[in-house]
Length: 333
Length: 290
Image 1 (cartoon, one colour):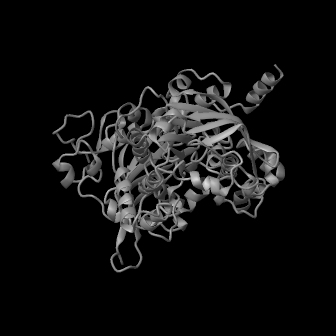
Image 2: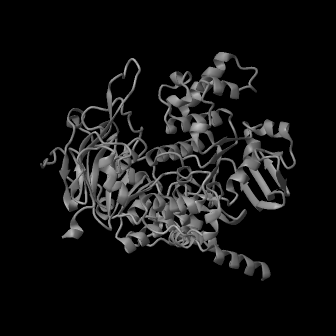
Image 3: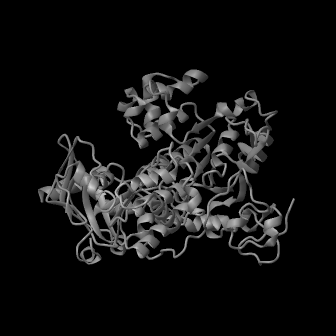
């Protein structure tokens, strides 16, 4: 059953930030992420999907301690973190690697690629830092070893991404948190990065938390999906089930918005209009009700709780798609 | 320019256009014609020359670029070898451009109303109030709520999607015969992308503007284009009606590009195909020798 123990587990995680000064917002706490629960097992790939401002990046950063959570619980390898101090994240930080959204800006521009890849090993004291060892790491990530002596500016987007992966693999991680790993890459390069992730998973049983807005990528690479809207998880569950049968109206709108590469299937109308509301002025009740075509009066007044839907999906909606309208879903827990 | 003339001749005519930087070719022997009201997509990967081609149409290339060819004409004006003033005269009424990142399209220091008023410098006969009305009208046309109020907004006060609408409004206000959109939805979220694509399609129907849409996203091209041009390594490798190309791509590169599109791969296949550039190079060499 050890295989079943999640590497990383979060329960009721909330992240709030102070809004600083100003006459109107002084001393106010602003909720960026609210009540997020997820678990990540070894060798599993979970994709967190949502639009700008959904809190997906903040969530990813919070799970490795870069933005400390304010409420909730995190367990790493079954052991709960005592508090959310920098020191308490040490076990996670030692065993995980982070791939930032813009790899080129996550490198020191004055350091050579080889040194950048070797740095985690030098700091942790684990693994060899000889040029052969670094070259084999680069090879694992599909980065030509001729680039190791170059500076970051000489790399293309895809090469920089591979260098970031090589650095992540430098101290074999049990968990990789990747923020938009395919953003800004051409499709064929995207495919290469995804294949690389799958190879790493196969070899090391590494778990992945991938933050992305690319639904096509999420569909192919992930085992589970977490859909976020305005800092909350609105739907989560097995990827195939969610694509087959999205139950939250927002999930459905999101899936339908993705243009299909087939000119015979054009949409007459955009699936959802308007944009994500400001977190400074959260709508009442269900936060999606203003844009939801199924919204009823209950949705305006009362926030829905997360309920267990069919096929392992969990959905935060009063009237999930596929269930009789007019009959609120039964809340569990 | 009368409407009759517009209907009888193409908005854009490019014949055997080549662009190079110090002897290194960036775009080679491109032929492209766009009819009034047509939406043409250019698809290709980074470095395929699609943006270079678009910039050449408006004379936005750096001075280190060498442009040659048989024809480059926009709204009936020959622009091959044209100088600054000649390009200035077609920017706006000939073609207007919408860029990828709406956040950097505008000056952060000036109100949107002032920036759009500046674009109307040609309209010397228009009074200040007439210019204001024209801007408000075009804001309404692109679906901006509180159109009059937006004039006093600074760019940072609007979201990316709203700013891209302002950028499209600014382009439309010039009443161009061709709207060049360089990856206009790449920086936007999918739900906003769907709305912007819908807007572009509506504008074509209402204003009859032709659109040159540059994208690396096959879905975007399939969604709104009538014709598609596939570019690879500075060359047009294939072009035709979008239905025909998507149903039956013939060039090996187009086939490889389509094969990589995750949305076209059946779920469950999690090994992704990648493009074998070596094989494509061999294919090109074989054709050269043949």
